[in-house]
Length: 237
Image (cartoon, rainbow, N blue to C red; front, side):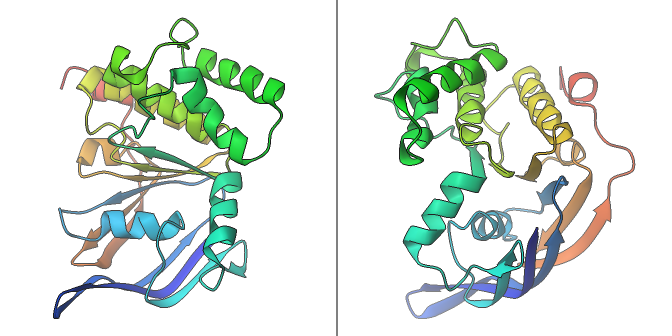
């Protein structure tokens, strides 16, 4: 599904060039649940942004379903993101001027889904997150856990093949974070590919595969044999 070969990412900070990623070789197959871990500054978010087509590597290749995507235009990359990817961020990234329903509807407008269909689907997604009674509430009227569930519903609006989550529980208390991870695990069991960045070892072990980064390089890539159960192992931390 996703294949990076010798991918690197450099940032120019004035006269200084910083190598955020170096020689990344990575294959992620459809249906995987991959955790990306590492200390601050290890390149986790840079890697996630490249995988999500939010940024381009400065070297190497990136193939999505065997198609090289680095050479695509910003318009083409935007279309792929909207049609095939879903994003869940630590800071929720909801539109404060829109209620929960309209936040979920937004990606479907860009996908040219009919007004009736997108409203019905958005209501169904929010109901599946247990938010049928909060559809017309604005983000500032919702708890952190509710906002993150709205964000997950929004990420599912266009039936993505892949969800990328950047510290999805970072701003939540443990019991709410556990529920978010349970939702993500359920989506993975329904064949959605998941790539999650986290700095928390227990949260990382909710995945099925763990990739560790250090100084912009992959230092380990292993299958997780003893996975964390979010509802029993994370609540009450």
